Length: 135
Image 1 (cartoon, rainbow, N blue to C red):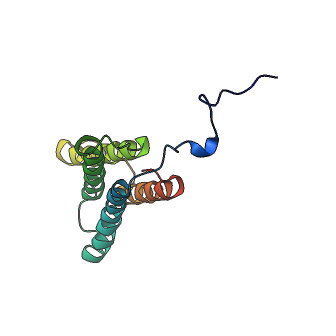
Image 2 (cartoon, one colour; image 1 turned 90 degrees about the horizontal axis):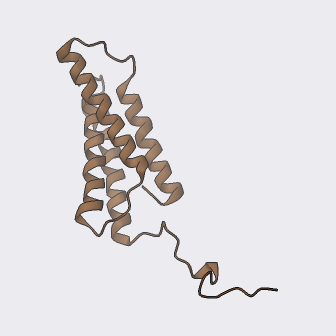
């Protein structure tokens, strides 16, 4: 019977899980979540009748996500940012920019509610972050 080499595997309890974060990294992610949720809550109080243009909501949330992700990657010690964060930020940014272009270039607008897509994206990111301790 072959023996296991202790230097290769060791016990699984001694390995560090990849999603363990420092307190500062977790704090930055929670601040990002609070900024996104806070913007949506503030928007519901300031603009209850939805008079603001649709493209503002996804562009602001995309800006929050891109700023947070860029800070975590470039300003800190290469903290890991989930691909879902980058993906949702770029998708929301694309929808917002496309809506602006449809207004000024007479393009056919997409028949989607940008506020609803933004809300679903924010909820998805927060739930994903809570469930996997990632963002």
